[in-house]
Image (cartoon, rainbow, N blue to C red; front, side, top):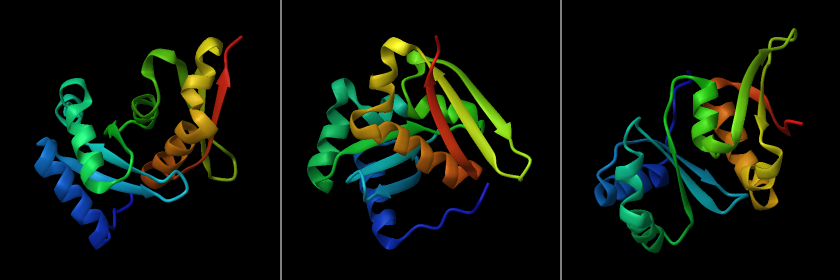
Length: 147
């Protein structure tokens, strides 16, 4: 796994998130294109990070004035992709090593839930791409519906 370099802005955001939620944050991804913050929290701390009925997230969003998304960490790329998307809608996650040395991931989802998995304007797909590239050096993410 590549070393994570954090800017002072990211460190400040992580500090705010940890102080307000009590969850341990591994990383903060500032998604300029999606105008949101993606926090990666340690395994088992998702409930702590979200809070009752999403109250913690709402409070943090009010402070940082940006939408927030939280993803639970996993060392396994397939599980991490599941955590970043809607795990209930995902049927299969396949990791492929290509001949040119690059890696790709294919996510097969329930066709009735594909739109929800992709998100408005593909924002969830973009979140998975950011996470897969940053932590697992996966260049290509494909989300397809099973028929």
